[in-house]
Amino acid sequence: MIKSYRDLMVWQKPMQLVTEVYRKTKTLPKEELYGLVSQIRRSSVSVPSNIAEGYGRNSTNDYLRFLQIAIGSLYELQTQLQICLNLEYLSKEDFKIIDEQSKEIERMLSSLIRKVGANK
Image (cartoon, rainbow, N blue to C red; front, side):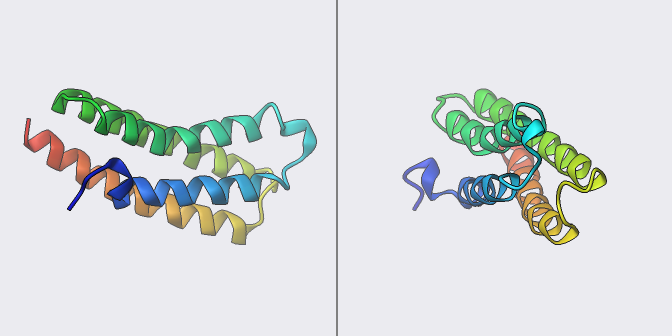
């Protein structure tokens, strides 16, 4: 039984992703600390944060809006990681690990958005 947003796999997986993102971005060039590193970390943190905030709202429309913001942040993260790969700031292996996690979360969020939207 789901008692809290913490019980949702769609929240737990992005929390794991945030941890991985922080670990992998430690190796990016120092001159990117206030550029790409900051952006990547903010967008990764935004995903579970918006899922949690939306869950706490008493409105299906609000929940749906926050889920849509979360998936938008996920798309931002995927784009920023692709930039890091293109610039060779991330190894192909590190990129693949994070990219696979993000795509799984994307599928989960898309499914949840469809379900919540159908129940409006």
